[in-house]
Length: 441
Length: 148
Image 1 (tube, helix red, strand yellow):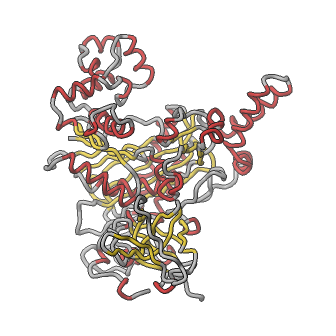
Image 2 (cartoon, rainbow over the protein chains, first blue to last red):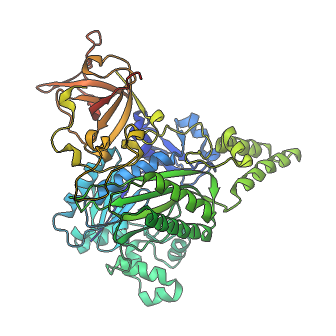
Image 3 (cartoon, chains in turn cyan, yellow):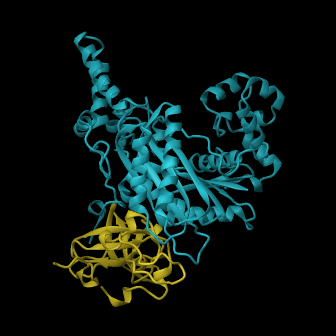
């Protein structure tokens, strides 16, 4: 049995831990330099803010509805992620960290009431870190992911699913009929791996719900769609096609992690691994035409070797500006490793994750500067002035003065060189001593 | 620091390391261990082990104000806050009051709760019946820098 554990609205939830006034209010987190909403609180979703929507399009909600926008703080999210992952990893023999806010657990051979275990995971992560999570269980990874979606939706929109499925949902404990009912009311686009395009094609073919898809003849599907969809269908029917370590690249982050055959203690060996992982994620990054704004690196000892001393550090390093350059990414990842590494520990796993992904690839900085020129040229031609103002507002929010200077001057990249000094960025409460939270007495 | 707040038995070996956040004064721990051997049990004392029982649940906060001075917590000190400790009467806690963090001693009498400062001129905070008192975490240690 697999579980998928993820943090609800991760980036917003991290911000709320250290700023209680954000609770109950509509909050979005903006990507570090393209001004798009990359995380939304439930309240912001209710206002109609869409994922990846440009800030200038929703900015009017700031005054009209009290919407609060924060600049992404990947140092904070990376550290909170590391805490959450470490806690969750202790619940099952095997864990695959899939993205900054979600991981799969393999419960093969674990006895006990999984729903109870799921509730315990949720309760513990919430109490220890302040982060709310959802847990989905299923016999395949695709089903675990779907169960997680239902756990989250049932919690957020009461009445959408039976209330008992909220927060923790175990497909394995549901009857055929219950499962059928749930799949009948879930859109096919909610299934892991079915993107907008395939979703639309399926709908055209009369396949609307997950149940419709599950009941589709596999041969018919094969002739019209890719083998990937066939795998998805098999997984939905309960046949496991994805092993714990199989990881389709995410759109918001790209990850490469692996458990070692035997424990590694030497820095040189870890450097090799981390640098290799960095090259692989950089390759995936270029394949999908993105650039990365930050690199997250972790190494971990085994939580299951309780008699051994534990060390599971992680670090998120912002790039001065988004890059696709393997050498830059590998060098950054390796330097992070060198800072975190301590001799004398048996490390069993390492990972490199690229986060803060920007569409547009290598020449992001330059392209953005051209984009700034363009509306001005349009202004001279007396084109749509309102649009220009909107664009300029957006640029001001995207960059701030400091960011624009960094992009053009190409300053040297230090360990903590920040990618754009954003005025809306919260303090790095857990990674910088001069930014820890203040408590009054 | 109250001596009873020093590490309890067994503390030094419990819990896992975590990166930057849980590292207290970084410079004093970054050097690492004398021996990589697991069996010898010989290693330089590590303040992370000494002070932090649960690294994943422990956070640092900077104190502002002196209303808790008699409890050993003064303006400018750093407190270690462990969210995994179940708050109990007598604990110094970080509570959320009016959306701000407030450091106070938690005092329970029967079903009533109060947040008490050590400065007698500071009024107790008694949560109204309807409003639940939110405890963010429990203070386990205070770190004060000496003038050197």
